Image (tube, rainbow, N blue to C red; front, side):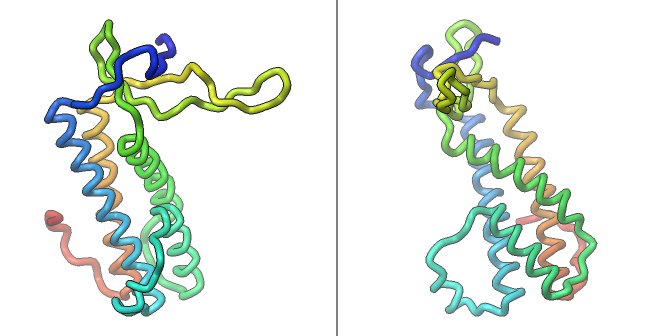
Length: 179
């Protein structure tokens, strides 16, 4: 595939409704994961809702998860959740979600495929300075990729919910449909 830069093709401002709907689902589901991770931290530390409002900012999801792992270890919380595997999945989902939320959409004039450009990758130049590449890959991104990411986030939600109940010391309720 030829390297495509947003200046070489028109930037898209209006995506098809079905693609926008899938992106909205991803953003919505990921925000639930972030909320639940924050809740786990507050519950382990026994922070009240009033004190929680005094926290100046929410860290990124992966930073919250790393803190949870430290707290689980320090507090000797018993959990059946594979924290290493969950971290890898969370990192993948968060990276893809950030690209969706902050990337630039372009449309290949020849194939009419939607491409999601997330910035150039750093390249080494002869004098050892690192610069942003003027050429960047812009992968095709569509409904199929959005649905795959949404499924990953749904699996993460189930595991994070299980971790939440483990931190409370309660059995996990039956797996019923989320909200």
